[in-house]
Length: 559
Image (cartoon, rainbow, N blue to C red; front, side, top):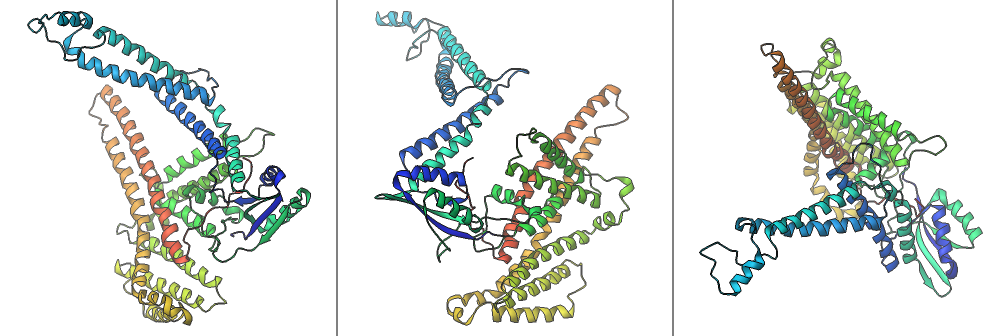
């Protein structure tokens, strides 16, 4: 569900405004609009946070460039110390670049003494018959320039080693404190004051209003709590059923949120996304790898006894990956696909035989069926939500149109012999419902064009159903890529080769398998981001009326 919000105006004595902000932050249930913060104190706090993040990035890059020896201890350094090392390295790098340019320019002329050459030229001695000198003489001998370059390169290496030896976790541990300071300074910026009174506005969920009122009594605040007015856009706080709460982390990761007045689609989103994930990856062995990595993540993030719980975001992502990975393993069992190969004694299983139809019609039928169920759920759900409004009939009419288009799609590709007669009656009745009940009488003048677009929208519905065939196409491509890498690898071994050559070929075969399947795994991850997300946030959401134009509820709280 999307939790109902109340608009809040909090008033306090101006002299105690900072104390009020601290109490409000400790309460942690009010969303403040902090986008208007622009004071110097806020800029300084934001700058400190940015500097800390930049310091961590610098250290992490140095560790990639100069990995620490095994067993080496890291050193705690402040952000300022890291910045000083980075600046010294940058200065040395700039000097080294200039020296390299000079060395490259003067190297063809040899290691001559520029002072001696200058003194001879000043005396009018012509050296052109003896040697060739550069037009601008260098400031030092070539050997001296090379020595200076070696000094700068040594300085770069030393700074990089010092940066790589820095314990960046000591800096990241300060992130919460820095973030809290940024948020507090921003809240202080948006706090309005007139005379002896200060006030601040925000949003609070209805279930937190009693806590807020109780706090107001103890802190002597004035509160004005009201419903959202037309034109206001409250933040969206999603609270799905407990089993489906991990999907909130996926929404946050994608940076999307339904509008406040829209629906919480967490349940169908997570269910269908799990199915899409499994079909797009298409390989049970890949799912087992994901699952093993997820179980390792559960183990590594297990808090020590008495130290609390895993962070909510960590729990959510691990929960999501457990479901997605398990679904992929199940799909691998149903399709008997493991690293692009099949287990011989499972080839005759009914599901394997059905999915392995050489004409691929069964897989296309499955994709179209998944698609129409996904889209019809959206339309029927929308209709049920407005049962007390006659426009619900238009939503049910769209469900009928989707069913007809599903039958047409299967007929087009030869899965069905044709569209049954009863389907045309369904289509006719559905058209009447959509045309007659999409708009109310007083909306015909302002929105009548929507009825004129009906033929295009119907064809778009056909395209939406067909687009689900990507689940089959991308999954099949993943399997075929895996099969080709398997063929390349196994083709290296030959009984006609010597033992030594076969050993070399075996190493090459393992390398091809690791690189090939690793690349395929990466491509599978990309296909999930592109296709699984699209089918939920575009095709399904368009039919459900979800615009994803909302913004997430983020309470003013301590990290």
